[in-house]
Image (cartoon, rainbow, N blue to C red; front, side, top):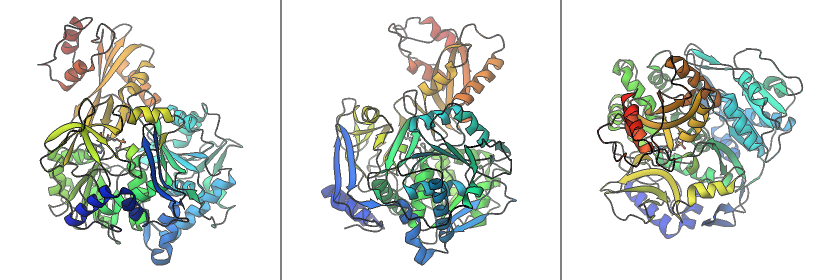
Length: 632
Ligand code: WT7
């Protein structure tokens, strides 16, 4: 039975076989790599209709014991977090497992002192600095449910997330630096909290010495609080199915949903997938460039690497500052061995030119990874040749916030990689392609809707506060399957190529937005009557946001209104959701029943004007000519 690492093609095939013949025995063996406080009684209890899965019921554990305590005896002095600050002139910082353990325990005591109890929700709105890792782990230590909100989201978005989860504490910092820019995080929290009733405490980390306003009775300084606590904090015994965190993500409806992950299954699958996909070795210096505000940062910057006991590099800055060589200089400086980033970053650095790569020594690299969106062949080759020098396997990892961990990917150097293909599913993951009728498509060289037919330990358990929504969104499109929302192709060898979303979700630079969510934001602008948003291919971002906007009157100075709409969207969601293109139109192509024909808008946005299909069923076919003529 498989217990540790899959190291050859034969291992892979036998693990796949074992996982199919006896899934419970397979996952029990995987889970026994973790330290449990109490063994489980039942490996798996499940139904997709209605939806309920329970993994390792009766088992108790705390994920921080697996991330920290477990390593102290043998690797206490090994670097856990290697912090590279925004400004290359500032010093990098190494935090050993011993130190991280102590900092987590102390901050966990700060949380307790400030009224946080097991099961409470804590919102984290922080820069990419070690304090964010400490705060996240401190929540897990005491059984509080963390809800990390990416610091690029607006006050309004944060308020929505705080209210939905009913958080009682917010942890933030005075401000943050990203490249040449600085952002006032604490001020944004203050704005958000004007719309929240549940928060009684804000804990502020002093990062930039900005001395923000502190509200008496509500706001306290992180460093002052530390003076009142010691570093003894036993790990809260968590039921395997106790929630570990909530992470909000966009779907095809207007309101982001709180994806809930629980403790035992999430820990098991993240640990398993991390070690196998990256073929982790004890002295790896592993760098995942994602922000902890996204699922990639949760699973593969924080929890996965720490459960493996290796060094995880945490970078505060951006790939293009002070120049487009920053990633490569950091790899050179710290001897990074495994590098995991997003296609959008690769494409923008590719566009900056090879001269930014050449000055640096990238010989330490052993494995390269890609995540978040399809990687086009050109970017894949550039990554493979100019960064990996054709020595490093490239793993293109397909997964989702809802899946908790990597589902389809090569295991570095063990199973085959192919440009633009995620590859084979991990052992234990039963992916299928479905046709329109929801029938499984057998055999290879086929295309369909990507679904999963058997549970895996780190799958979404519910959407916070609304289990019905979870069931409706993922388990009703095709009865008996988890539906991913992606279309995919299986090639002659059974390797999957992800084609992209088949729902109204746009993936911009690896970030997910619902078209309805952006439309709602645009419609908040007083001059706007209606809008329709579609994605279109974008050289760097993968997909760009194209908005068709109807105003009361066509604006005389469209550039002013455009700026105003950017502001409206930035306020409602955040700068990251700003449309790339806005076209003012006098109407939208609608059917007689009032449904917007997005297919036509997509074609216009893509610039594919030759074949707009049948427009005769439209209420006003002439509107299409106007839209085509006005394309931006
Ligand atoms: C959607 C999930 C999970 C990491 C970050 C994104 C797309 C993700 C790939 C890939 C092609 C990919 C899918 C998926 N996606 N990875 N390797 N190849 N597409 O998480 O925000 O939950 O988005 O990202 O469309 O459904 P997310």
